[in-house]
Image (cartoon, rainbow, N blue to C red; front, side):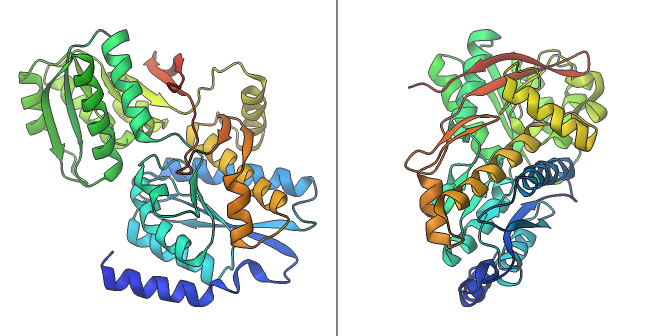
Length: 377
């Protein structure tokens, strides 16, 4: 978004922020954002489902502050400009007192300044780029961040897969993919590995063979590809066509049933870092899966569980604050020590939770839990 356009949006938000949360409304109105259409639609659908499940449970138990909760969900389409528009609308027109979302880091980076200016707390669900919460003290997240995720990926590639030569390919138009690749490369090199190829591709393309040809010629043991699932599936298929037989590895952007639907056998034996595994035997995880399956007739992915956690965290903060005022909710969020499905959420100084990551392998066309890696103390 151009600077003058962003300034205009922020001015409008500030003008309407005073009236947020509906004043004497019979509802507590909370916003939620995710990409239910566009190239990351499965992320948004899961996010909306997780949000809905949490709100429905709260309302069945009496709501919050003696009122029922009204959730207004907005589709950001995976586009930063659209994201800025829907965040503004939620604050100005829908009078929300907090916003849960969104998924994609570049869209959260468009929405965060709007929330910060209006003093409306925002809890990103799955935006892992460190810059998101750096926007200001009203911006939080429910997921771990890319420096940890990229480091975990490099550690697993080097120590568990015994890779010594790695290649990277990533979307040049996405802060998430670029950042994750940088953190992977830094840690892999630090461990003693060698980055033999480093290839960027333009956003929205479907032909990656020029980059992959150079990668295959460099003879890597592993290809690190932190793109979203739709690009990953195509890259894996094209890498196999060019003769690459080793594993690919990536981040939480792989977590979609469409990865295997599109990639088929090309993604078999590949790995990614994620926020949770359906195979986690903890009762809180299995209980959530049962409730989600009963309501939506499918097994929840990480996007669903992160949205569920983020919404519960936000509503709990409203309850703790005893208020729908932005500063009070912000203070309650900052002081949270919340037991979520994905683990304890307790924020550091930058409003990022310190959480474990899991490693997932695609095996026999299914996601299979490999191990859990905790953050270094």
